[in-house]
Image (cartoon, rainbow, N blue to C red; front, side, top):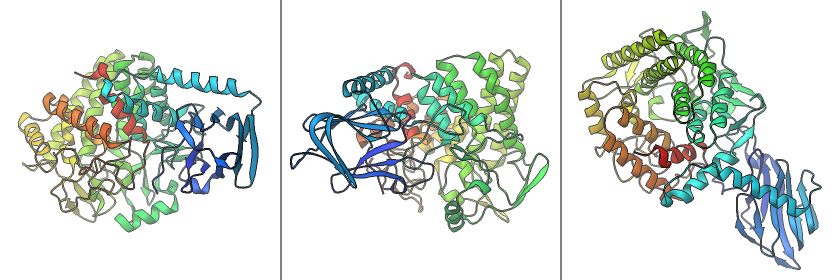
Length: 528
């Protein structure tokens, strides 16, 4: 069920939301848990005599009711009603609002102090927001607020705050989400941007794998870490991800399949460095990311052909894409495009660290990887996706993954031009590009997650690819159309229906990477 925008705070698991009957309810955000299973309080209403006092307006720092009573966070665990002349009632309790009434937690501070602290806390956060055009400012403020409230202390994050994708169940630090979050945070909070990368690398395995998720209870790094419900859903959709020839530390993995996310860490690190240079941070992360890169080309290349593949649908981030309709392993062109770009970015990092010979080697590897990708996956018309079942199956469904080699910036000119022609064709281009399945493909569904809706990360990566490949005008147009869709669409959603520009029914709102990437695209200092 789609939830409305909650009243919540940075560092807090508590969310205050309207119920269907007009009352308010409070729940706690937890990893992979429905809010209905973590309810703290229900049926909250404010009354003056027998007259109910509705919420008059909501701000980042408070909810204000008719009559002047305000709801404010005293700390992450404490919600307090501040004011006078009202009575609060809720299921199983009630109390007068005279000064302060503590609903959760414990506070001895008076109302004026609580309101002042909350206001100053949010003024400081919004004061760090990057400059954007006036027409985008309201949506940008919503995006910057989302990045703020989605910052949570995660038990396994080593004391750091991680940006969770959403407090509606997505309570953890997901791998490629963290990269996108870092790109948005780098403008006003580069320290927090770096921490998103550190949280992941702190849990890197000895063989180089970086886990899919870091959450309160541990990590998701292999199929044994998946909830049972995920196994059942995946088995129904793509079959069971079973034994294969991959190895880890020289030993067969067998039936345990590693789970990670696309290799964008070096890309994100360099994006942070471009805005807020920090050579010490580059030195800190260079070798761990290099080990991660080698993992993809060894453990995640079971057929040894030099091109990595996704061993599990979750590792692609594209959980229900049609590329998985043939089975749970696939080799789409996006993965090896990311690896080629990552080699180039590792070269940039090595150069900045004075490791010139290594920089040259990385760039040579990037060029060789693109040559291999073209040789093996370019069929003269498009880049193909291979599903790896008992035999290799070429996936017929058309997705923007076949356009992602633009991201490398290293394609032969005639191939890059062909990809751009496909991008701006009616298959992928309309008032709201880019659909995650082509408009004219039989599998196109405008509301089904990765089967048609627009996702901001896909558009963002294509925009970067267009610039890197020498098509700045198309990049500018895609940027403008993307910003307009988000600005006019009513919120920062997980994904959008490309036909209407509205939220697809199952998409959550206040989504982290949509907020981060919208901000980055809108930021004036980065715009040409």
